[in-house]
Image 1 (cartoon, rainbow, N blue to C red):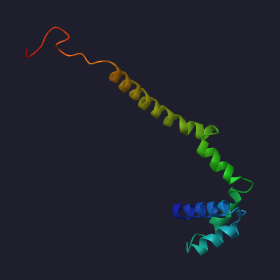
Image 2: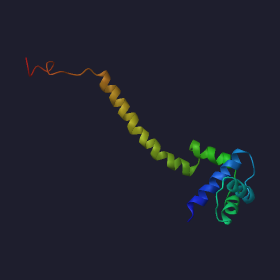
Image 3: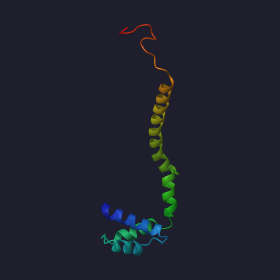
Image 4: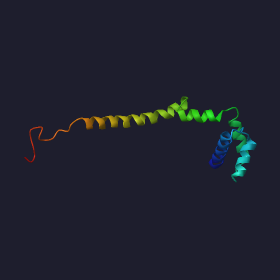
Length: 112
């Protein structure tokens, strides 16, 4: 599996989307040549075919917002991780509000 080639094609596709240019194999190849990146000749066409009919901007926005089943599942652990932090903040605030009891208040003092 050629991850460098895949990553290069992803970046090239994102460049095309950002410039509002249709994603085709030829245009991905052009971006890669301009960036002086060499990939196997089948990668640009493969990515163009995979992204055919897909609104990449909406896809990126949906992933960033957590909409959809897969992003929602990925966001659930993140939300779960935020809950203990929020709980810790509440506990800390509660501790700040309660006056601390000293040994003198309980009727016994170590030095005194």
